[in-house]
Amino acid sequence: MLVAGNWKSNKSFNEAQEFAHAFARFPKAPLGVEVMVAPPAPYLAALGTKGVPFLLGAQNVSSTGPGAQTGEFTADMLSGCGVTDVIVGHSERRDGHGDDDDRVAEKVNRVLDAGLRVVFCCGESLHDRQSDVHFDKVLRQLESGVLHLSAEVMSRVVVAYEPIWAIGTGLTATALQAQEMHAAIRQWLSEAYDTDIAKRIPLLYGGSCKPSNADELFACQDVDGGLIGGASLDPESFQALVEAAGRAVMNREKPKA
Ligand code: PEP
Image (cartoon, rainbow, N blue to C red; front, side, top):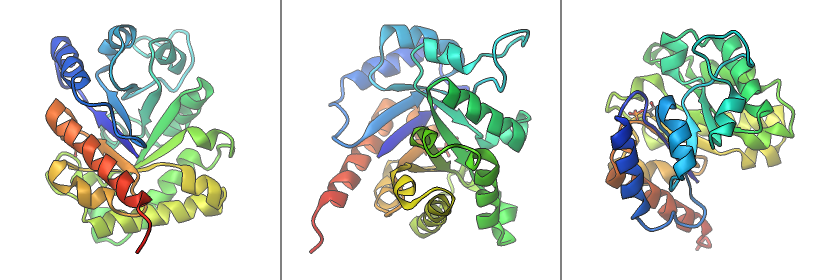
């Protein structure tokens, strides 16, 4: 299970440090649960140097290498700051910042070439869902974003299914909606690669996941954790999500009666 926080453009640097201190006082993540937080980019180097009680993620990366690219930061630069994971293809970047399918695929390549793990986001709009094209939409995003990758690098790919209508809206996909999309993604991965690879790729759910609905979502067979926006900003609620993931791991390990 992976519980990943996406702080977006929130928190001052002091607040980010306070979060790290508060989070360090909680018990270590349960066995089988990884915790990652993606703070705003300007804080990454300092947090990476000080050491934080979670894996350090970036919310964005340049689609190019080093050179005359004012304002961009490369995957290698992130790696040098202690970043392990990079979120690519988030709907807020696809819709508002020009990350079309081609650019998303380039960013995926850059992240993997730098030896980092990519958290590849996909998800449908409300209109897509109401028009019953949500499966096609998500699988097309996967096709253009990851199908070109070798089986070898797929071990550093995480897929986050984030229905756009559920992001930051308080609306959450039902466990059934999440499970059926995750199962479709798993099936697509097993056809594109093989069942072993498909089984090993963590599939995160994102979209108003919070302590009150995490147990139900994480209990779904093909949900391997969450990409968490709003509920990752407060250390207590983020910790509650980490504990929910721990319960899901325990329940999965229980022998079936
Ligand atoms: C997100 O932005 O990735 C996200 C899932 O946000 P929220 O949890 O606030 O819906």
